[in-house]
Image (spheres, rainbow, N blue to C red):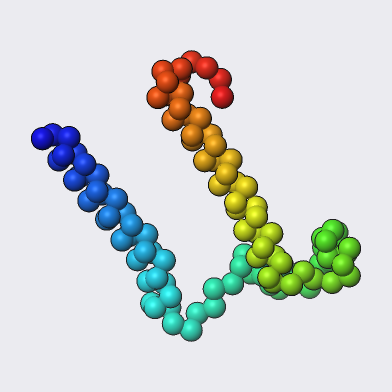
Amino acid sequence: MENQNKKKSNKKTIIILLIIAVLMTFIPLFALKGAEFGGSDDAGSEVVSEVDSSYHSWFDPILETAIGGELPGEVESLLFCVQTGIGVGICAFVMGRFYERKKLGKEDEDL
């Protein structure tokens, strides 16, 4: 009986957290109509140019130098997604190792 109450409590908590996550995602889009959601790189570049208009970056990005121009937005998004996938894979691997160690009772071993 207690186990069923705990499961129901966990389901309620998960549902509430998912609803909060969805609301956090969509409320800014509707609350701030017409707002521009730009990246921090663009905002930083604008502030630097306002503070010191003679500033020049120390180096050019390697890929932009190699192809002779800026990367298309689709390629930047692809590289970002690949980087994210690698990071998620590493995190999932480590979490899986912790889970298996706990499950097998080998908590004193190194990863």
